[in-house]
Length: 468
Image 1 (tube, rainbow, N blue to C red):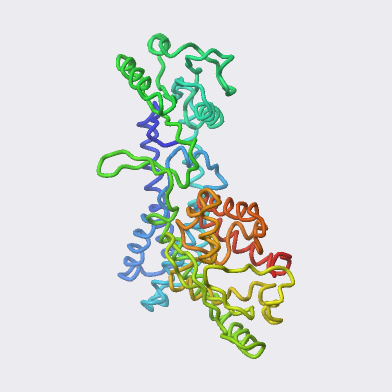
Image 2 (image 1 turned 45 degrees about the horizontal axis):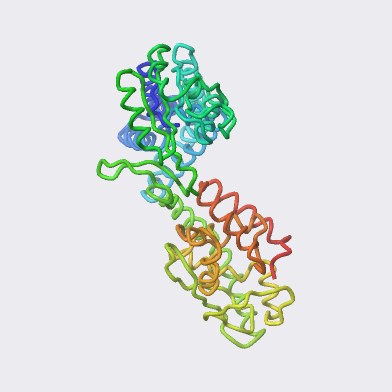
């Protein structure tokens, strides 16, 4: 639910929201000041520069994220974790600045350490206090807005349930208006059906209804227009709830293009800052892993070279971001180098797999060269696994939504792989299951999900029976 659905006590909520935006920065700067003065450190130019840098970082990193209603729904535990993570990011940036400018030695370590430990505790307390105050105002019965819903269907019933479950949204649903008789309504309505659509306007005037959700199907647009025209004589807020969930949505969101409202029904999850976060994670984790893995990769390459004739690195064409062909690197594990119109998948006890190749495939060590693909920007650490071009051309004709998985960079590992969808896809159902998980990844991506997938992948390396 977006904050476009306003609250009655909007002024009080706005003032507390401003307070929530100002207090974290004030707390951080004040805490640094008292730590410095408490240890008797001089308040010189160097200290003022540090205060200024900290204030700027705090304004950027410690601001409340997301809509007010989303934050109230998240709960105090999630809010505390968010504060801690953002504080760690702030400290990391600050220490990095100190390292490259060689200015960290200027400041007293005991004062900085005390500040680094004490401040997040104070930030968490401030955030929880403001959270409690905001929630109390929002949950006040005087803040509740009375709502009704025009149209009884799956999307409107779901909306009603969500409003009932999340009282912090400050809205109570009186009931539905529907032209069909209760016996013909094919969904279970969480609130009573109050009448037919022609009775709605009169009911709004008689019962001081604040909000009307029009949830009629898109094909009944003329009824929607007529209903809105009848309601122009009221002061109720009107929201149209299009039944777009009859479609299989990927990263659905509303936006406007030069003032024209549009609904994104299928889009990449890595637009804007999310793309920066995703790419930054890939680069940082690769740079951390490569110094450790490069000696291992050199040894593995030598074993591949001496175990059987052929190149050390196997290069194969696969589909990358937006369906563009890329070259993916792997340690060669077979006696063949298939990359044509027909590519035969490896099977259990496949005679084409070399002895060292079997070991590499068993523990996914053959995928290590793809870290170079990640550094190049062709792949990501986490994402849908890329398939050979021949397999893509085969399955795109058989599985609905197959090519949507290419809205993101392919990954070395993915949600499908940690859910058991790995290895040979001898049946169409096997590939359908893999694609299902890939699309779920696109729908629900977060940085935390990527880290969870990486952790699960590492745990499964020693226990996956489908790797052959």
